[in-house]
Image (cartoon, rainbow, N blue to C red):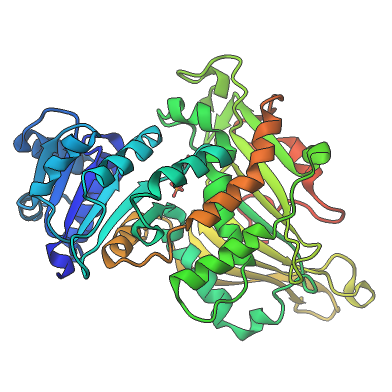
Length: 478
Ligand code: BG6
């Protein structure tokens, strides 16, 4: 059966994720003739009829899609069905009238319902393809678990019904163009292969700074915090792309094997010296982009004594031959000075007698606000004197807002094609929980350090830095 006849079922079809992200992405793919699935079936508890669902989706598309086009919508709407029901197997069984052959089940549900939904679909007989050559796939949004224990429990709940090759765990960072370019750039340029190790690299910094605050997501965020929200998944995935061994071919399983291996090679964080490896921060009142913003504990819905971290930083060491002794720093925070994200790789300094001390190069993959690769190097300053200056060689990739498709669209296309390379495998998820679990545990008993909103983060982040290293200031290509 070809992909054009597959059915795309959205569980939680009346929810926030579906209206804000999923349908706009489907709409744009459809408008560009890229949407290859046949029917789209919305499934949710609301006892709506099809027209109510269509009205709801249309109203939201108009709000979230630029250049909404009535004709495109009519074409898309003709494919959309609606079925109301809960997550019990008999109720889900009603989907069989839409699902005969190839099908994708997208869980746009709160995470505490993932296990029930996956089991319900299984018990209703929807997870097993009726015959060979037919696929059944399930797509799960993050978070995949809340800690190591719950991630394993979720894995166990899924496994009787869904094989690993049917499960697509969305980490939208892996659909970002610059993120994919890290792998391409790394493995296509011989120049990099010869310097990509502890002999030449002094440190790696992965920074994801946001000016955004809670955006109405306080119920989720106050339970999650920055470590769960950003580091355990997105930043840890970026880390694997920088640190993994070169794959021999572009094959999902080989990529996952290498990523899982590097996560397993991360040295356990020492509980007695955890403060030297992990920093938690929380923003206090300040100014962001010229506007006064309240402290985290004064945000709507947040208790005044909340100890949730809105900033998290980790220092990791990879105990293998390639990376022995090289610190990898990961940090992300809300309400910081700028929206700025990058992966910075610093080369070791050259001998200092010739041109002075502390001269080292950086290779920077900039992800936000615009996308580019910078090579920060040194050269002779024009003139009579033998003086060096820093130069930045920039390969612009994409300007802010220039993207013609979102990470989401890229990942949806991959799900339709059945390409799992950009979806973390369970062992990767498990290994990254194993890294952060002791930190989560330790942070239960401590308050995060305050940082003023609109700054580069808590002062305590500097204590993670090894001798002669420092954080790159946000927003600079130097
Ligand atoms: C999400 C986090 O996964 O990623 C958000 O839950 C965060 O808190 C977002 O703001 C950042 O990703 P992007 O692509 O919007 O910059």
